[in-house]
Image 1 (spheres, rainbow, N blue to C red):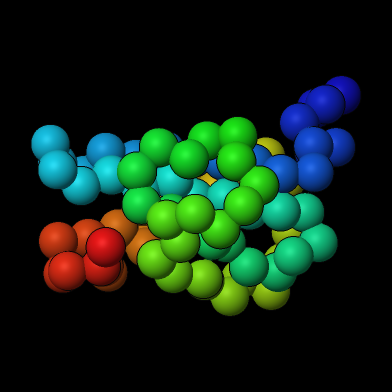
Image 2 (cartoon, rainbow, N blue to C red):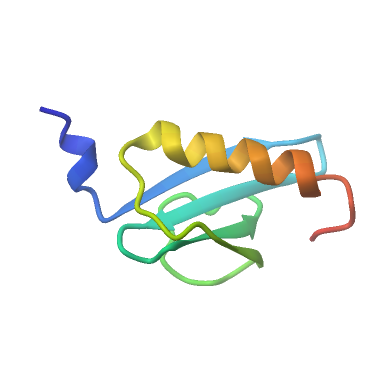
Amino acid sequence: MNDKKHLPMAWHFERVSARESYTFRWGRGAGVITVHRGDARGSHGDDGLVDTVQVGTDWIDDQDVRVQAKKWIRANAGRGVR
């Protein structure tokens, strides 16, 4: 049994460059991923919030969060989103 599917939130941290990094937070049942500037793993607040991505589904495991993070980075990183 995959115990991760019962977690209420999942986070993923991604360093884009020496000066640019983001944390992606996906709360179960939220239908959105919040994107935060810097390392905000484990946070529940909106400090450093730079974007909210509508996903309309729940995550199954950590891989789902990583996949969505990579999509967001390809579309937004390095474009002044800070």
